[in-house]
Amino acid sequence: MVTGYEHTSRRLPRIDAIDMARGIALIAMAIFHFGYDLEMFGVAEPGFTSQTGMKLFARSIASSFLFLVGVSLVLASTPDGIQPRPFLIRLGKITGAAALITIATYFATPRVFIFFGILHHIAVASVLGLLFLRLHWVINLTAAAATLALGLAVRYGMAGWDELNNLGGWWTGLSTSMPVSSDFVPVFPFFAAVLFGIGMTQLAREKGYLHRLAVVRATSRFGRLLQFTGRHSLVFYLLHQPIMIGILFVVLKIAGLI
Image 1 (spheres, one colour):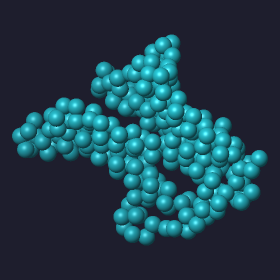
Image 2 (cartoon, helix red, strand yellow):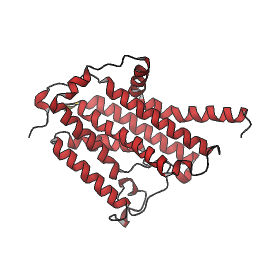
Image 3 (cartoon, helix red, strand yellow):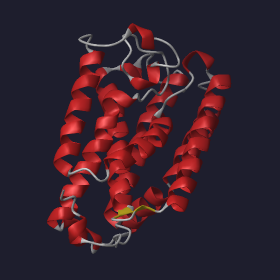
Image 4 (cartoon, rainbow, N blue to C red):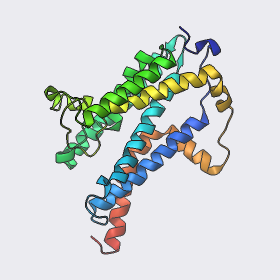
C-alpha cells in the first residue's frame, strides 16, 4: 500500500509555517481565555463565553491544535517509524502538564475542574495517532469523517451509551450526558481533527507540497515571534492564564473595579 514514504526516506527539517500556525492558535486561545477571565471578574456579562459564537471559537481553536498534532505525527515519522526517545519525552511532558492542570483546577474550581481538556486529549491522541501513520491517507480521511459523524450523532442525541455517563466514560464523548467542565475535549468528535491532520499531511507529502513548504522561512519580526511561541507551546499554555489573571487583577484593583 502506498503511504507517501516512497517520496522521502527521511524526516523533513522543521517547518516554520507549522510553528507559526501553532503560534496563531495559541494567541487565539489566549484571546478566548481573556474573555473567560473578564467574565470571572465580573467585567463581562455572565455567560459571555457560553454564547454560540464564543463556543464555536473555542471549538475551532481546540480543533486547530489537534489538527496540528496529526500534522506533527506525520512530520516526525519515517519509514522506520517514530523515534521512541523524543516521542516519549514529549508525551511525558504533556501528560505531566495535563495532570498538573487537573490537580490545580480541582482545588481552584472543583465544580468545573478539568479532567479531560485539550492537553489530556493531545496526550491520548499522540498515542492513538500512531495506529494510523502507516495507513493510506484515503483511509485516514475516511476514518476522520466517520469519527466526526459519530461524535456529532452522539452530541445531538442520535446515539450514545448510558453506561458511559460517569467520570470513567465521559472522556470518550460517547456518553448520553455531558459533564460540566471548564475545558472538555472528548475523543469523539475531536479526534477527527487529528485524523484529518494525519491524512492531509500524508497527502501533502505524497504530492511533494511539504518540501515546498519547508523552504518557506519566518523572516518578519512578527513571523519569528509566532514561530518562537509555537515552538514553546506547552510553556505558553501553562503560563498564559496565571499571567493574564494576575495582570487583570492588578489593573482592576487599581481602577477600583474589584
